[in-house]
Image (cartoon, rainbow, N blue to C red):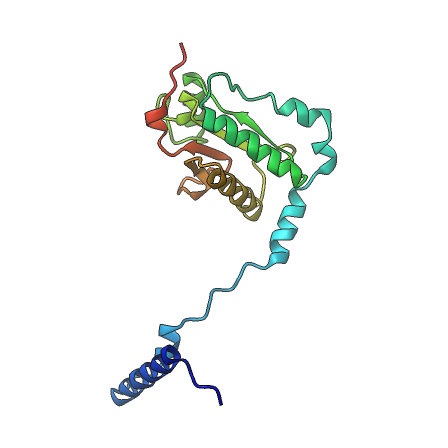
Length: 197
């Protein structure tokens, strides 16, 4: 018979003693469950595949309209990290047959105040990284912002992975109380502000 590893034997003895003490004090013994809780239920892989499949549109990715969308955002003089990130995210999602594009990178003061009044932004003019070329919104080519939470989670996962791989310090708006899953900004955008002349 194989000998039990010392650490496992010590753990078993410790749990046994704690259960014994709990029983002596009239407490129900859930020591084992509290010390070693079961792992959380994993997200079913089929759920993610189904969500991804719902965002796929191979025909649109190959269309002229998709190509035209790629030129919609004003990129002139935007921060190099934002430009790189947008390019990488769109390219990676396209490789998955998910058409994404950036409708907004720069935002004028008037556009920012308009977004604030509409309630689509919590920032007034001069308070948003969009006003300084330090943010980008990336949305679906045919569904716009109307992706499910799971679909946005896939986009976020891909975006965060790309940011890490390329040493880009970005913040995703889907992690905020004011949920803005299309939004990506430089983590320290205030120190990288670009002022247009």
